[in-house]
Length: 121
Length: 111
Image (tube, rainbow over all chains, first blue to last red; front, side, top):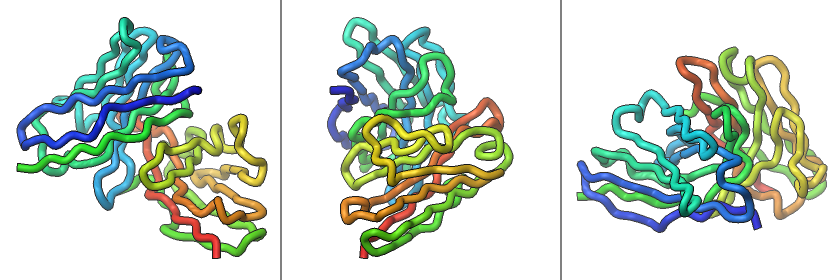
């Protein structure tokens, strides 16, 4: 079964770092890239960036460029999204989605179930 | 704020046709294709239409898509009760270094 399984919900304090994992099953990890998208309460979807599991190229949204790092681990076939210096408005559901291996503009066809992140003091 | 504009809601009775619009700009829908997703609360979004009008394997043919200029649309023909859900559109935007933009979502209610 083709799916993406994300890590569980987290509660973080302002200023802390967050690392969410995305583990695919049912397809070859290095044949794809992974987009990360978030949705804050009452707001629309917001693209954060893309990483290729094929060549580790990345493309980050300008808004997150200074706080965001996306990585992949070929040993465990897992994609990671790390967001630093968390703020209250980073509270959101974070999704990973399977995309193109070479270009970030390729369609995301499979999405993970989402990871709820709450930033609270 | 979503960069693609969708109506917040749409509705129809079983068997009717419902069309959802998605309005963008020259740098996103005007230059690239539109994808459509269904999103049930708490679940993973599901791809319904890609490249404006293509259906992935397993998606019923009552779902169809089209694009004209800077707008796309999703049509559900022969509405069924299980089609009650949120639907959102997505397109690549060529501005800056490029990024994905999404619609705010349309809640479809089956009356």
